[in-house]
Image (tube, rainbow over all chains, first blue to last red):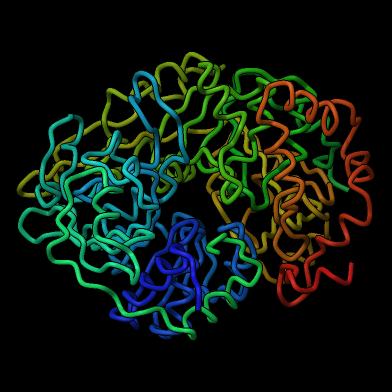
Length: 257
Length: 322
């Protein structure tokens, strides 16, 4: 079956969640909701999806356009305030946090605030939403479109702290651990590959390449010098995976195809 | 009926220029749109808004809202908020970036009578970087300047731990007025919300004045049968407005669904300043009141949005019938 690269991204990300069945996860706005729903259908039936809308253990009967609407709160375990669910990151409720971002660097720092110089010429983008709260305390999965302007050496502004972060009230870069932050970026999922982080250098390397994608393309489309020497080719996308994904998002609300 | 019950026009007269306004609802959910339109009609100035919202975009385009202390500036799945982006680029809208928890904690602190809280939700982020803070500029806009803290955050050593770990102190902000759109309000002001609660309860407890706009006014006794289901006590509510469809085009759980077509059209029109002016003329300024707005939307459009009992939304595959 033919499929788009974005569909591959969603499916490969869902496969990664199979290793976390039964765990608590918090998913941010956008593709994370689609990925976690697919994972729950196919690979991790007991994963608990929680949303920063105050909604715990959600079912998502229909893919939502609004993250704060009735398709999220529908028969969830409890519907409380946004703070109740998002402060679960600080409490340690969630093993995994799943976010998107406009710009991601090799240390897994994510920028969703401004592109360019905050104090000079810049373009404003979405803003943190819950991304900073999730990134400070959980093991994060970051989903981003693979493009040299999006996968960069260092982000223009750290919205969500990754492995090399800002010391509070300064521009000094320090290791995440130095600030006592738990968790940290687990992987970057793009429409071409999955990147993971080297234990020592904390820099992203290519771990899995989707079938049909060429190494050269990844190198060309990555804005930092990326290590592809450890890359393996992922297993072909199955008919079942594609059909399930297309059934979940039957109207292609998330424009994956 | 209680004296609290007023028209939308009367209620919005309570909002003064330079007020800090907390809106209930989140992004495209249960957002008090009719109040946004009325704020535009009454040409309010220098308002400062808080937390996580985005469908206030037309009031930014109309020049009513000049400051924002919060965490989000997009229209959710609809992408860029055209007026917010434009006015921000022109320097007319000043944004102070917070995280999501912190933008609720500033309310929570005020709601519980606290002056500040210690929050660790932005460590490692540039949100904590003082060189990016614009709080002083927002302070200049405020009618009551003392309500906006001089500093966004303060860093201090934790006096309760041996190693004196660094903590981030976040000051409370007490809104002048909270404007909420809820599903049901009692005749005395008790509020029942269905679905996502957002920041409504904290905002109502924290604000000096609370305006509640509701899909329907119901007997207080009905709500008192199950008091645990009520989110805001009547003693906190100052004005009540009954306004069915008052959150259109946003989604109101168990009442109506998101009007995606309407929002997409807005986004398209508001890309240019002229386009936004045309849109505002058509949907706000040339319309006398909410009743006329609902009439203009028309019954066909509204019927397609009605939520289904037992679900709280309208399944997309049911749309064909209408």
